[in-house]
Length: 276
Image 1 (tube, rainbow, N blue to C red):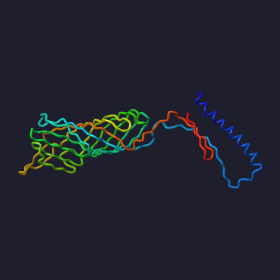
Image 2 (tube, rainbow, N blue to C red; image 1 turned 90 degrees about the horizontal axis):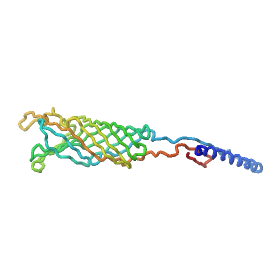
Image 3 (cartoon, one colour; image 1 turned 90 degrees about the vertical axis):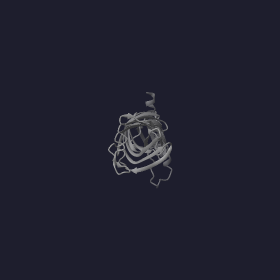
């Protein structure tokens, strides 16, 4: 109650001082020459309320950093041995955020990711297969989304595979490699689900799962004899990765003021503000 009366007390005090100053000014103006400049001093009082969260749409830049992927692989229904794949490059992106309150928001954006897997069909043979994708995520944020100290996020993403690359190793020696733009060896569109958390100043952990087969089982090519072959016909691979996400720019989170209301008093160029 006392806190709410402070602005009223200051207002009355200001009006009294203004009236006293006006009396002195009138008496002084009786002997002073008239002001021919036409300038006027305007006194104003403004009452307002600070917003509870960041308003409008804001952009954050970052993406997926170190990325460790795993795969469940089967050939002809039998488990195929594979190796976890680690990569640092090239994983970047930008998100467009909208906060509806200080504890809930949504986001979308565009991301570029390097995803893939490493398999060992035989003891002497190792294959490294990856795709660069352009993805559009859609997700929600729950927690301290306004100041960014800690919040959870979850959602889905649709990736478009733009470049496929494969390397073949025999007894540890690289014997063949190639890459293809918009290859038919993988599906063009790769949906996924993700969830994770983020802490201040912008780092977080994310898990992302791709339920669709990484390979296109209908892909057809020709062998050296000219015969049609389906190299991925009996191959199934479901991929999941864990990544350390980051935001290095655009992370200027909105700071909620503890005192929600304000009173501003302006007199010419002078300004005085009281928060309560």
